Image 1 (tube, helix red, strand yellow):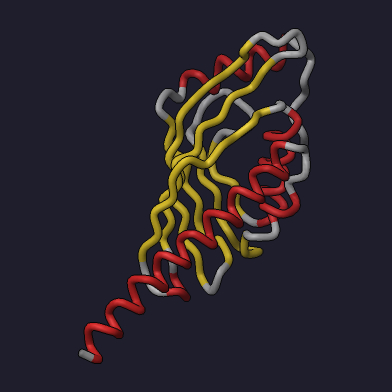
Image 2 (cartoon, rainbow, N blue to C red; image 1 turned 45 degrees about the vertical axis):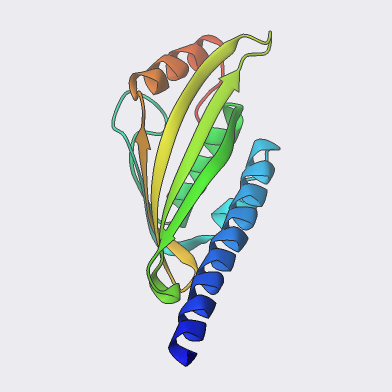
Length: 160
């Protein structure tokens, strides 16, 4: 009986953890959508690495360390990209979690024209509550290059 109660408590605790993480991440994305990348940036460890697909765009490649991730997020905000988290899966012990996040994003031009829309899966690894590795996997990486061309045509410069 005690084993069953313990197992039940563990299942409930994991469900609560997932729910709390989802609430926090959605709050960070709302702030990002409003132009404030600091809440999300604060989740990264100083030595974190964010990997994005290669290509001819401002987000390409590996972003190593918090200053590089800061620049990545400032470019995200400057481009007017709006994101939404629809699902979250969590695995591993509290001190070393792995998160899989379904993240959809889109950008609209000043005249209301849709510039970009994509579906993404983020693979995030944490250590003691801080993001240490973040990999983005896009449904269509070509859309990012198209967005880059549209942003340049609109005069939206990359943050350096």
